[in-house]
Amino acid sequence: MTGSERPVPAVRSLAAQSRRQLIYLALVIFISLIALVVTFSFYQVGQASKSYMRSEALVLERALEENPDYTLPRTPSFSAYRTWEGIPPEIRGLFSPNRIQPSEPIEILRRNREGVREYGALVYSNERQTGGIYLIEFEPADKIDALITDLFRQTLIDAGLIAGLFMLGLFVVISWLFSNALKPLNLLVEWSARIKQNPDAGADARFAISELNEIAQHLLSTLAQLRANNEREQQFLRHASHELRTPLAIIQASLDTLAVRTTTDDPGYPALERARRASANMLLLSEALLWLARQSSRPATRSLVNPAVLCEGLMADMRYLIEHKAIEIELQSQAEAIEIEGDLFRILLANLIRNAFQHAADGTITLSVTTTSVTIVNPVDRDSAPADACFGLGLQLVERIADKLGWQFSFVQQGAQARAVLCWGDQSLRPS
Image (cartoon, rainbow, N blue to C red):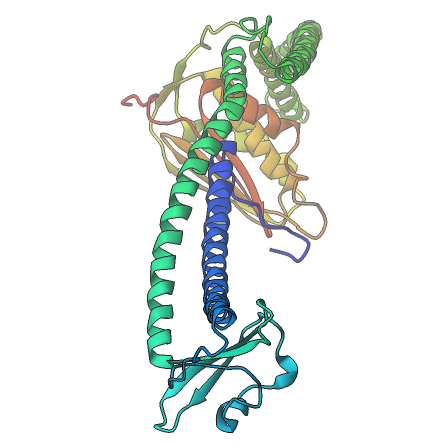
């Protein structure tokens, strides 16, 4: 693949692409919901711990308001002080006075005298006009970490359940919406399949969605134009073939008369024979064009033909095309007599051999003949002609006739070699 070529994306149906995008959307929403629930849960835990300290401080202030001589608690884990200076220096040094705001707890992490990690919190409260108090609380860090771990695990479980239920409902809703959105397109596809088999069946397209009706009308209009163009081409082909038959018949009759009057040792006899064969081929070609233009399914006439013998005769007739080229011909025959559409088969082989002789470069033309196929390989000059120069009217005619007969034809030019293969299968085999 060259730098200018782009890779062809994989082809998927609209429903498959929609399902894939829906799965991606669901994953994004699921992860976002879990992150949102976990973040909100931890935020709420932080706010709850701060509210707890504020309520404890407020309880102590009420007690002081009722009894100014109330003794404030003084324990290693929970203590309260009336003034900043009343706080022991070793505890006071853990907190910065500049950061203290009323009713806003401050949190720290420390190691106590026994070397145990502890979380500490300080809050200043002055809600009851008691002069304010400083409430300080310490909890072992291992205990708090264990609580946070359990909380995190339970939060993830709850968040997963909530997000899963939400996503299940969302998936059902979106799937229903996609199904209803794609249903009109499926109807359009079914309708297009019906008019493909029977173009007149879908002439009166009626859908519940106006846009689909517009698409259907455009498709019908395009189909009608194609049918009209095809009919004009077939009519022209029939008329042209009929017009060609009369002069070709006159030419053939005149050549036959000359052949009767010309002896085989006459110098012009070989040229006369080539002209007769060319005229006969043109008559057969005219018949083939008429056969292609007819809509009738009546099969062409079949006859007993030996493909190898027919190829030898055609190569002898067209050898003049390679007289001035350094070309050798190699015929590999493993053919038996077969019952086949003889006239059309002759036209196909003649076009294939003529194409190979006309466009062959110096080298060897190989013709492989079996009872089911013919393969022609010829060298080409890739520097003097583009890759599709060998695919002219003759090979297009071969492709059209083979397609209508149900045969297989392929033509490939790769590098300095062109290969044409015509297969008619084994339904025509007949013992010789």
